[in-house]
Length: 576
Image (cartoon, rainbow, N blue to C red):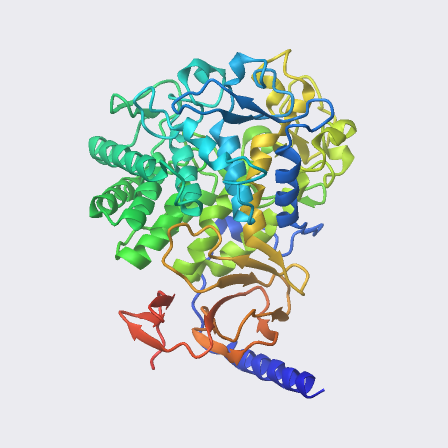
């Protein structure tokens, strides 16, 4: 009884403190215009357990003995490209006739699927380096294309299957993004043999490429063997600079070589100098993240607002309309999903939506002025993304409702469109239409079930590691550290957005004796507590909690609040 009374008093004190703080100076929030158009509280609201989905994807898909038509979805490729070892292949889409052990020597599989699934599982705590006697992390080395002299991670293991699909060696983002994925996986498995050497070779290639490009990224791709930029019929992709910068900044944080910092700054300057929206596919959100982080950590002054607008707005020119969708289609909010804002009235993709959260959520730690905007976007994206899965999309809004069982509840449709993008079928379905492009990849041969995307679904661990529900419906707890790879050793930090028209009281349960700091009010809201605390978030506002060991001594240096050698607040403005 004494404990309960003490806890009750604690909660009252914390609430009282926060209620007072809500009327005091806060970090001024900056809107993202595209996010401002999204629903504050999307409907119908249904936040699924994304961590559980990630765990089920892993246990279901990584089963070489899985039964059922089109299963298993994995096989072993023994062609031993680049490294003298077999590598696991994973279908890009269910039933893709180009893939599997009996097609194309078993060697057509994509890094975007394999690496994305390894990263996603690792983010939710699965050790993919030793899973039932298999080292799936080591197998990823086969995507490091040393046989061709490119010496970077690529989307396929060899050029023999390059033209089958996946953009190998001709579509820049497909060559850059596997290296972004690799560096994230490398942080999770720093002791994996050969990874150090591979990471340095990738950084050297990207550093030299940036030097050759000399501020001009207006090319379709870069030949990393010949070290020459090239153009073809594919759009020029200036946002590849963001991918170069991300890898180089990660390499700088890992190895401490100042050349890599120089290269990251150079690539970001090239991106920052663009006059029109250069967004192409997945890389612009990483540019926005780096603008926030490098401005905070390295004293740069990149235009974060511009890069966030480019990321969200759908004003891309060469890749017309690429951005974040906004809309309520027949009573269903689809806002926050990522893809084309113009194709058939809008066509978003699950993988793009998952992967946008990777850089955009930790961005808030480095620039909390965007906490409310990012929190609001994430609520919309997290809510709408369940609709890619057949068990959550109403049957009247999906192309293959009668075949949903083939997904075993873990494989989603590739995309979601306002109207069917097929010219000859599904035209009677009302928006939103869950579907996929698989049948178009090999017309007349790929089955209809190839609309179910294995490679996009494999990235689910990104959401799974970031998103948790709270005691208040619609208020999410978003982990700012989960995908902040190579970040400075940070205190646990979480973002909360209140989508309601009234203040809400949210419960936080510390695991140890802690002090709790609100990054947006720039004050400690609780000290020396272990019992659950409650804090109030004003209507349509947000909070960012940073949790320190109880009694941590703090000091201010260069407008940063520090504790135990770590940054608590990069933009500390209160007077002591």
